[in-house]
Length: 287
Image (cartoon, rainbow, N blue to C red; front, top):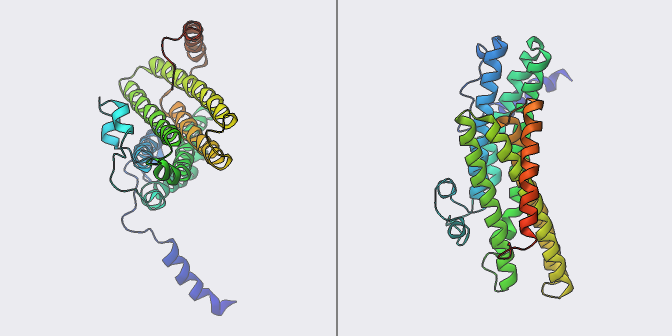
């Protein structure tokens, strides 16, 4: 066994050595981890950096220009053509920008966790879980990427429309996520929480309308069983992107005071009741 130790050490040192070009933490180091408050601030800042990297990867994975998503340009115009001329390698971007940064967040926070109070530990876990939510959103985007590019220029008008609407709806979610991020930076967590709840409700309703329409298209033989299967899978991936982004945003941006969230949710439900009543007689069909 001993003769094998030296080659094994050399192999591990080469394999585990940090690769150049990979994202490194800006706010987390051993001195920042010495105090609970500075540790939590550092972890949150690094997770926000992770969020920004994930946002760009998801946009570009959907062939949407991140700069246009955060602009005032019409989303229908943005989602129409493939905004970016070439597709990105999501695996390569994930390895370079996200994986190593998240690993550092986990490593530093794990070493310092013993000094935290129960409330601080919960906050730390929220941020770490937000990082994992962002990673899952990236993975779902990767699964979605191939068919979005394949069917965007489909000669089948219905298939072309349905995949355009997947990109449009995700573009709306991404733009709203940017608005929520800005609300949080302005310091109004109550607005942020209401916005997140409203966005989650809209994602749920959109999924329901979409599934109802797909069932009708299958019954009417507008799409084949094979295409319907692809669509159902891609609808699932698209929903997962939205859900994981929302989960990350809830951990990073929302108020965590139970009383405040209850009051905000009550207001949202009252608004939803009015919206549902109006939707019984819509002026135009929703996509």
